[in-house]
Length: 215
Image 1 (cartoon, rainbow, N blue to C red):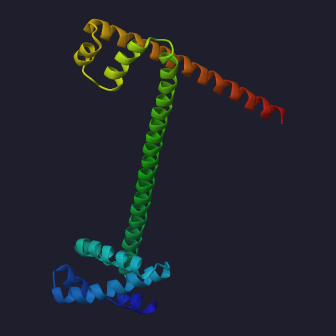
Image 2: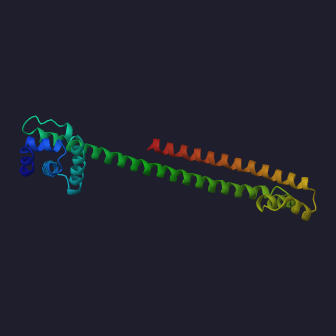
Image 3: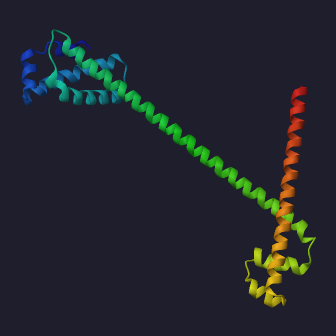
């Protein structure tokens, strides 16, 4: 740890001046000393090698950008400046990682919500289909065979009303009136079944609450 820090502490004002004037050769020597010092700081922070490499690289980009405005104010000032830059780069890296994790968790949450919504929608579709099937059985028993056939072939089988009316030898308006009547009966039965389900669910919940309070 002392090797890199000592090299930065011993950096001459003349070398720093040549770097600030744009001397390429001086920059190579200066940059090597800076990297050593920042690496030492990373080891002191117990960073793993990949994390330390990122901090060194990001810190040196800041050094390159700001070295022209640095003022040497005595032994140790350059090392303190470098460590302040490294600390800032490390803090920024932690903040970016936290934001990334938060965004990932938020994405997973939104995906889960979407999946739950799809499952709820699918469940509601299946439940509705079951209610319609049960309602159809009930309505089928309450209407004439011809009325049911006109409804079923046009509404369920998607056959042409004109074709069905012609084959069954009934006026078209009679066919549509019959289909509409069956549809109204189905809607009524579905609603009644829904009310029965809601009532049963409320009854089950009351029983569950009663058992829980009794315990």
